[in-house]
Each structure stands twice: as structure tokens, then as C-alpha cells.
Image (tube, rainbow, N blue to C red; front, top):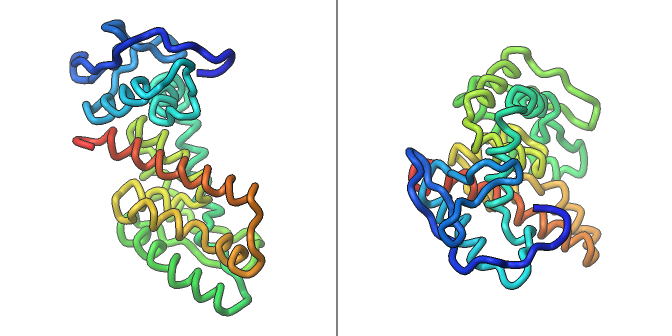
Length: 238
């Protein structure tokens, strides 16, 4: 979905059963990924949402308005071949998880971090068996091997569609724990986004923000929420 803009050459986007999956079609012809695979998705709600992105295109296809299609293409074309590498990369975020690095001052910011992030670290210890250490400042803090192994196992247990969503959520938030808690349903996506932005929001409250930075933040937030939506729709019923 990159390169020269493509014109809309179809009339109808629809969904049809494809074995245990659901395939998106354009005028009755199978829609294919850039890797030439049939775009067959695990649930009807996800397939219908992808089809809706294609129905909503005007004369020229705009890939930036099709986040679910892009995520589906990534999952089908790239994740199977890179699964082991992706799992290792994602597990590595646990070594420098955002939630573990706290401000020493001002006290109000440190308190906001503690109130927002400590419950998530408690959740990870209770739900995953990963008790991560917390430090002040930016000097790397060595995490317990047992906690990292638990996080690695949790990542490896995700299916390909969940890995796609998790990769996006973790990259945007800086936290593997927050990403896992969001996909698990422990956190509402808007709440998760706000918790990932405690440091940035503090800066905005005290120093303000220019239009370009505000636009970039809005774009990141949309991507974060779209990744969560992709994961939700890819599960049992959307």
C-alpha cells in the first residue's frame, strides 16, 4: 500500500467465508496483501471493518486512512517469518520499561507516576509473575531474570494478530507492561494512553505545546487506539 497513489477501480467491498476465516473481496474478487496472500481474517468483525475501510475510499486510495488494512497486511505478510525476532524485540522492552523509571523531582510528578504506574507493576507481578524493579532517573536498572522470563513467555503466547497490535502499542507507549495490560483488557485504551503520557503531559501543563507537537501527539494517539481496536476485532467477536 505504498508508492504511486492508486485509483479506486471497484464498486463493492464485501466479506465472504473462507474456511475458518473471513475474506475481503472487491467486486467479488479476493483482496490480496502486498505479498499476494488472500486477505483472510480470523473474525467477521475484523473483516467487515477492513471492508469498510475500502468502501470509504474516494477516487484515490489513501492508505493512511486504512489502519486496519495495514495491520492485517503486516500480520499476514511479515509476522510469520519474523515471529521469533519480534517476540525477542518485544520482550526486550521489559528491560527498560517506561513504568520503572521515575522522576526524583518535582514531588508532584513523582507522585503522579507512582499513583499511575505502581498498580500496573502490581498487576504484572500478580497476573504474569513479573515483578519489575523501579529506579529514579535514567540510569539503566537491571531487572530480575525471573521477571524477564515471565514477560518473554507472555509475549510468545500471543497469536500473530496480537503481536502486530502489541508491537504498535509498546512502541508508542514505551512500556511492555502497559501494552500487555491494555490487550488483556485490564486497562481501557484511553486510560492506557493517558498513563503512557504522564511525563509528556506534565511538560505540556507547565511549558505548553506548539501546533506541530500537538498534531504529532494526536497522530500517535490515533495509532495507539487503532492498534487496540485491531486486536479487539481480531479476537472472538469484536
